[in-house]
Every structure is written in C-alpha cells, then in structure tokens.
Length: 216
Image 1 (cartoon, rainbow, N blue to C red):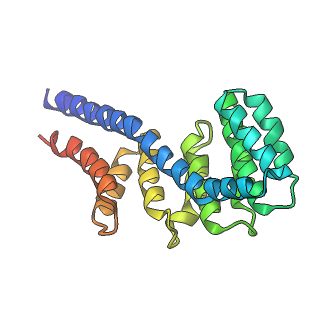
Image 2 (image 1 turned 30 degrees about the horizontal axis):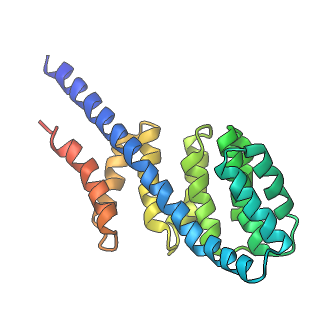
Image 3 (image 1 turned 135 degrees about the vertical axis):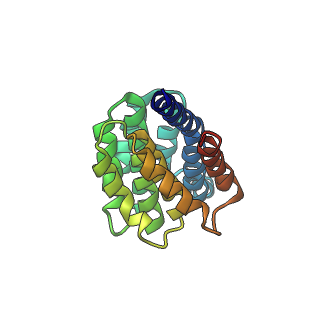
C-alpha cells in the first residue's frame, strides 16, 4: 500500500512541476524577445527614422507590422526580401522574423532551419547566435531531446551572457521529456549559483518547493 502512495505522490510532484514550468516558460520567452528587441530592434528603428526609411528597413518594419496583424504569409514575403539585403543587421533581423512567422504558421521544421541559419553563421555576433539557439529550443515541439540538448550545449559550456537562461531552459527540457531526476539535479546545481537573478531564483525556488513539500 505504501508503494502505491509513493507512486501517486511522485506523479503528483511531476504534474505540479510541469504545470509550474508551463506557466513560467512564457516569461523566459518574453525575456529573450525583449533582449532581442532592445539589442537590435530599437537601434535599427532609430536608424530607420533618421535615414527616412531605407529600402531594407522599410521591408523589415513592414514585415513586423504584418506579423503583428497576424498576416503571417505577407510578413514572410517582406522578411524574405530582407535576407537578400547587404546589411548583415537587417539580414539577421529578417531571419528572426521569418522564424517567428513560420512558428506562428506551424512550420516548425522551417523555423528550426531559420534559427540554424543564424547560429551557424560566424559573421553574426555570438550573442544573437546564442539567442537563436534558445528560441529554437523553446519553440521546438517536434525534435528529440538529444537534438535540442545539442543545440543548447554551446551556450551551457561557454561564458555566454545567456548561459543562465540556457541552464533554466535545460531544466524545462528535461521536464518536458520526463527526465525528472536529472531535472532535479540540474535545478539544485543552478540554485547554488550566486549569479542568478532574483526573478530566476524565485522561479527555481518554486520548483524546488514542490518536491520538498512532498518528501513524505
């Protein structure tokens, strides 16, 4: 009888932790989008206003507008023109835009390839290449655990500015694939780091409390 209760307790803990990560994963995505927008979008938006709408900026912001209007095919058309521009910044932004439009349409395989085009391009700043890796894993609901973990590895094994978010995403990935014991070990390891933010620590503490409250 005790074994039955132990099994039920463990299932409840797994359900609780999955629910928490489901609720909080959107914040990770939001943070990444904000970082992308602040790091690239506003710079090019200011440039766009100053230079009175260059061809490349016109196409990019038209693509953004169509994306916001949920006219995803039109946004793809505009972003696709952007990747043919000489400006590497707009090419990179357009690839992010194409990936997001493909994600909204449900073309996950195409989205994965779009992000791959970014993180495998050595001419693009490493920060944005790492960001494309994070977004690829966050939005990929098709690939195997091994494939997604492989995409995260370069961030986890480097002093990237996005390493902490990648470590948090790794835990989410482990939970998504029911690797609960590994997720708990990674969670404990991440909580011991002194450089995590207050918000991140709160999210991780919440996961930790789910298990601590069900030990008995």
